[in-house]
Length: 337
Ligand code: NAI
Ligand code: MG
Image 1 (cartoon, rainbow, N blue to C red):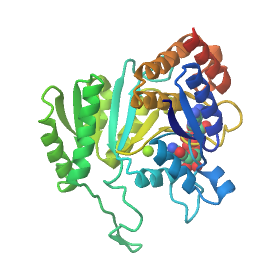
Image 2: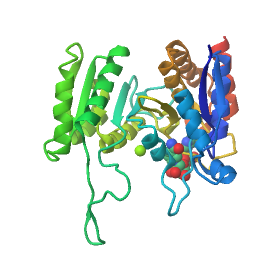
Image 3: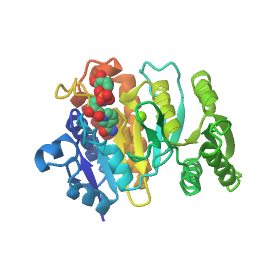
Image 4: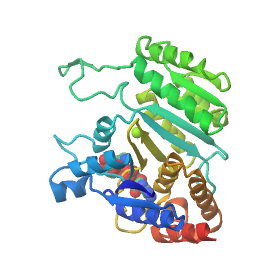
């Protein structure tokens, strides 16, 4: 039986990079069936809402979505669609690999790590949960629960186990934010005892920033709360050459949404200049998730090979002279060879 997924092409460069990605998935003969659904500006224009019910239904039905970047309109009444999707499907784990590729402007080689960010609580609560907001004083809430911490730390250890990784680092600020970050650290220590075969390390977030920049190779899997994870995962993207190569997965019990980390890049939309790699690497994560890790690896190997040997086919952000389409073409040729 073939696997079906929901596909959201998205706004701006979304359709261009999605078409490139689907070409490579076809060449890999992944046997996926697609239901194309709308979200973002396209959906607002076609259906009068940023996320139509039919799109939510498709994601719920298949449990897996591949999503292009969405433009959130500026102005009151529009809350981020990505945040809405994470809440709606309780996508508690934000999983962002940071892997070095050749031919980038990165200052390091051979980085291979994953940040696992708690995606549903921490400092990112629904609107209206500020304690005080009177124009003179602003007090916001940080919420950390035992349940939320347990599931994210366990997710990190299980990921380490299933992907042959050796170490999990819990990043926190328990020395200062004793209540919430302290609870997260306590729970991380408890869960770590269930995985004696995996090394457990604790690190305070400010030190973690310095250590990541000085000696990133010491990290393997990093698990942390929402705000720290947001910041650290972008730092890690910077370590390996920037947004053009940064994928992310949002994973819950019932659904998983795979996407590029970058946005809809309206400045280059329609010009065939968009680098499709971040979405392709998100598709590779999706293939891992669907039990097709060999095909996920083929995408990662292909990107490596094309960046090394086909500079004429690579997009300008990677220093090449090609287009979105030639990049995809080079990858198709690689996987078919
Ligand atoms: P952006 O990531 O779209 O663009 C930042 C810069 O990076 C731009 O110069 C852009 O040309 C470049 N860039 C981004 N992706 C690229 C790619 N694949 N290849 C080559 N260059 C690329 O961020 P920005 O401008 O802050 O946001 C634009 C829109 O995207 C906003 O409406 C924002 O809300 C939305 N957004 C959506 C996200 C999502 O759906 N996951 C994530 C971030 C932003
Ligand atoms: Mg962020």
